Image (cartoon, rainbow, N blue to C red; front, top):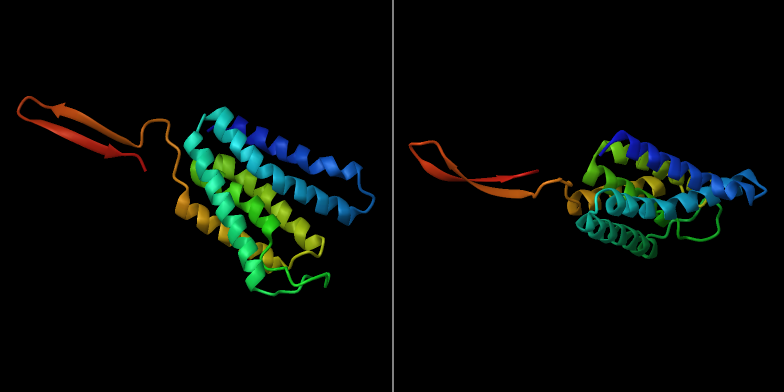
Length: 186
């Protein structure tokens, strides 16, 4: 976990956000498309950080599990709660599944590797939330609910990454006694 990795992630996210800007004519369309691309890119970037930097297959499994559960719960809630979108197109506003897709890998990176990875990811996820509200696809509270859902699910499922094994057992001796020490990394 170093600062250069979080800077690299920030640059990747900035690059992803700038891709759709040349293809669209309206500013609102640009922001919405950029937000969608960042939402799709965040899980890919999080998986890449886990695999390429840490070779952390357990983390990738936790990322997939937490993201699938977050987005699935968001989609299920959309069927139960009938909140009208700000653009009046339908009653599928609450919660934002796009924001859920963005906030879940951000919460994963924070919980698994710390703030160095989580802070840039949360900034990118916040942009996704902003893009959904700006495009009048969701209310601010739809995005807030998605972020709370993602943070809660990740808090429950994701474990902290440690370079060493999580548990260690060693024999100790001090001349007068012999024992066994068991320790656990939190």
